[in-house]
Image 1 (cartoon, rainbow, N blue to C red):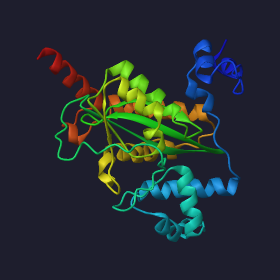
Image 2: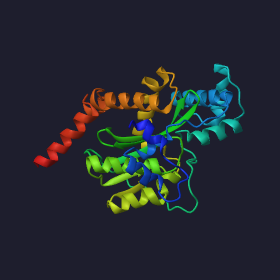
Image 3: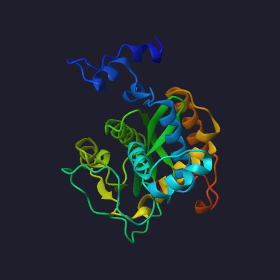
Image 4: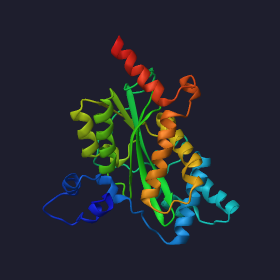
Length: 284
């Protein structure tokens, strides 16, 4: 039985078996049932995709600047509409100002632990973030777990919902494959302050760090990852569905980890830098 046929057997309203349990029994990834893009009317989707292109090119633009820039590419929308769509897309300008990530009022916010902390070895600090992926008839969300020192992408997941489960699934895979970091750093979004994410980190005895309000540099490496991914892969294709998006992202991240040299890593690839440091620690 093919994976697509097994996915068709999933019953989202099954009251006896959770989605996680159904996926485990059918041996499919839980997040793969969310590969159907979120849909809006075509005109709104075109506008959202253009907002994402502008934001990727100018990540310091807020809703006011994007609304003013849109006519250059033949679009028009007021600031309030742009701000509402940016909220749906989980986009926030990287400038010093209020942190607009969707926080949950009842979730605890953890302190930022990386200030003046030298980070030069793998598995010292990991970071995570979510970005918007445009698809022909809708959009998806992408989460990644990255090793801070070596820029290696440890795991990632696509989803058509901002529910925290796809973030937790990516985190669990990264820990299973690479061990655990000393510190995990994220923004203050509800996916990262909710019980699933926090419990997973706490059980693994991982220290929790969250970006300070308005500190756009706190997760700058993964922001650069998103920009490179979109400019070098996502925007070069007319992605028609979630499974094509997965293939394109998978290919690019494989290239990024194993072939793309980084100046900050002495022109080594993230994989080379990561595993060299792991082997050095083993030999010490």
